[in-house]
Length: 453
Image (cartoon, rainbow, N blue to C red; front, side, top):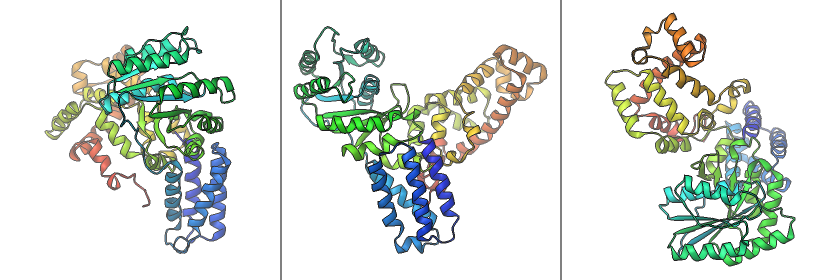
């Protein structure tokens, strides 16, 4: 996420930090590079102009020019201005109303409204302990209603029936009536995707909004659409009283243009960000953490939350006690750790949140993928119990047998054993520090190493 922009920012700040003292010319050169990086990331021109001017004014202040670490001072300013641009603080959903609280999702075709509808339902059910119902008013896209029904069933959410033969207005009225009668806390309404130039469809969504009177009207933004999505946000904001937006498909967006523009264009906060295909891959949008990621400083706080939320605490505690007692870390334990990393969204998701990974060579980061996890598990499961508990007995003939059983090569077995030995040493360190999340909390008080302020 934001890889391209992060890499360019890293190059710019490395150059600025190379100066013993900064001059106005150095600063203007750096700002010109930042301007180009933002435009290439598909950030809207008015946003870029405002952002650069705000950074320029602060960067030319006397304390920055006379600072012993001017490069870090400017990094701090850019970070703070990015946070301001993204919205300063996370703004939660406003649900303080007479049930059912209606949440209305709107956006362009293909933005990911239906999957976001289910993700939001899961979030509210699990995090807010709400009784949630979903209803689809999308009678235009073939299979849209069925898709929401399937997602609701998979995630144990209530689905209110509708049909492609019904009129959206009638579906909205009926859904609201059922939600009231059955005492649901929240009704999430999925609308049909539409083009912002389609007057008839825009009038229809305006009518739906009038009937539903939602407490939250959220614009669903496909991060990868960049400038097009932002232009649409402005049009939807003119038609509907938007209360916020949700960024989708952010894991596939290397640029970051939509994230950096939509709050400025609509004047409404970004409330959630979707970073994967699973139902649980929806997180609160935290501007400070996103700014840290853009500047290549990682997102250790979110990683800690992922570890504490998505890993088996009981199993981790047993492993920690076992290592402390000197019983060692075996390949079965290694396999469990691999599976727990998979539950956190895979290695690429973890690496994105670690500080400094934007400085890694592209040929290294491109080789990191979760298919490696599948291969490692297959190799371990091809071993005997004795081999898993005592890897030192794995000689040449055993390696050949394991390779044959797992459909891999002897070199893969050697690589796994090397990784296992490294993990063994790491686990001992983490155990002594009280676990991986505690170890990460120790990085500059929860901030990534190298964080300049």
